[in-house]
Structure formats: C-alpha cells, structure tokens
Image (cartoon, rainbow, N blue to C red):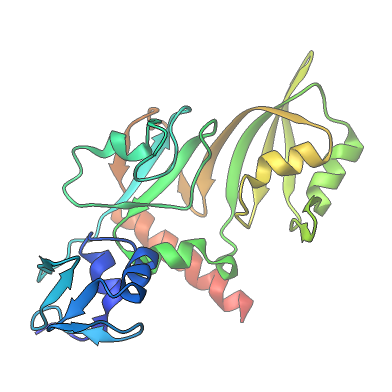
Length: 250
C-alpha cells in the first residue's frame, strides 16, 4: 500500500496539476478528500483515499515511472505548458512522451539550448534550488565588442536590479570578429533572464544565447527541437553534483 503523501505532491506526480496550482485549488475549496474539503499541508493515501478536483475523481497510478529528459530548445518557443497568446510552447515538441513532464527552470523565447524535463518534482526542486550551485554554461554572442573592463565586471558580479547583484561568474572570450564577440559564460545561479540582464548592465547587446551545460550534463550533438532521455550515468552524476552542492552550502 502506498505511503501517505502531501496532496499537492500526489496531484503533481499524477500529472493533474502543479503543486502551486494545487495549493490554489485547495484554498478555493475545489479539492475534496473523502467528501471533505482538503486542507493545506494534509496528506493522503493515493491507494485508499478518494480525491476529487473540480468534481472529477483523480485516479493515482500505483507505480510511477519517472522520466528525465534533455531537450535542445530552439529559438521561438516559450518555456510554458500552454500560452494564452498562442505562441509555440516547448511542450509542443514532446507530443510522443508517454508521461506528462514539466520543464525544470526555463529559457526565454529567444534563447536556445539545454532544457531539462521531468515528472520527478523532488529532483526538479533540488536542481533549481539556489543551494545546489549547479554550474550552467552558456555560449553568448554579443555586440559590438567587449573590453577587459566589461569582462571583469561580468566576472565579479553586476547589479541587475534595484537590490539584485549577481554572484561571480566565469567569462571566456571564444571568438572575436568585427562587430561581434562570442563568449562562454558560466554562472551558478538562475535568476530570470540573468545572462541577458548581466550583459545589458555592462553595455553589451546579446545577439544569440545558447545553454550548453547544466552541472555534469552536456548538450553535445543533440539537434534543435529534439529530446532524449538522460542516461543512467548522467542521472547519477547529476544527483551526485546536487548532493555535493548541498553539502557545501551546509
């Protein structure tokens, strides 16, 4: 028999809704457990309890198959499950995935490269948590040029908001051409549109932005718009990197 689990997690694991949305539905009284309104923080037994969401019963799978996917996100897609403006979503590229999965973090519409997906909410939260300090590597094309002073500013940390200063980063110049420079920027945090805001703060315009790695995971030769499951060795390496990051924080 299944062990008790928080309602939000059970609904998220079952692919019904996100944890945050489940909390909203609980507050609105739209989730019933055995005929009574659910309470925030309460647990259920998925094998025994009857759960209704907006009047529809939820049937929880007895054995959950967790999926861990890597996608090479193309430009022109938004990192959402659906879009009110009718823009193309990354989930449009996952039509043949047998389980409902969610993006881990995001890339903005004009950015490309590695994007992870999973239905393992616990691991997703650990990947995104600031305490893990997972390195994220980006190939960034900027214009018109970059000075030593600008590179030093990006490396040391720059102010990208009223009370927001970035952590130190690693900045390498990979290629220089008239009017454009290709950089490799490595950061260990994931603020909204961080690389673009960092470059803008020092007077650089981002022409192209591609994420090439997250922790030990490398994008490699995966073609734009395609996805693949993580190899067991990659998943082990990712979990180990997260654990090491969490230990350092303590």
